[in-house]
Amino acid sequence: MFAGLTSTREEIQDRLRNTPEGLASSLRLSGTGTQESLWDQLKDLSMPVLLVVGAKDQKFHQIGQEMKNAIGPNAHLAAIENAGHSVHLEQTKEFYLVVEQFLQ
Image (cartoon, rainbow, N blue to C red; front, top):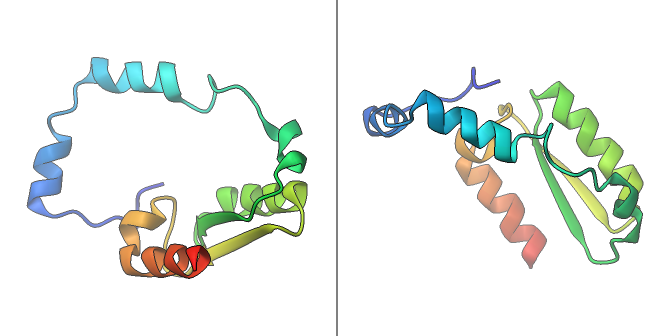
């Protein structure tokens, strides 16, 4: 999942502050298995929607396509090359440009 993610020494030190208890709590409270499914409501979105995935993340690329289909023509799916699951960290500049262009 994070194979394409490179880390600076500072980022590694920051992550080392995580505790097993804190990480477990995060998964229990915020993990995808605990979140309410809102798939049935996607069709009700009328505003422009940007879905961003890493092109190397096959699972979430497929989920993004399914979400785009469920939302309809107001949804845009951007698959950023040379990025996996952590697209915003792996290809920060490209992620920023996609979001900036969408907001304009």
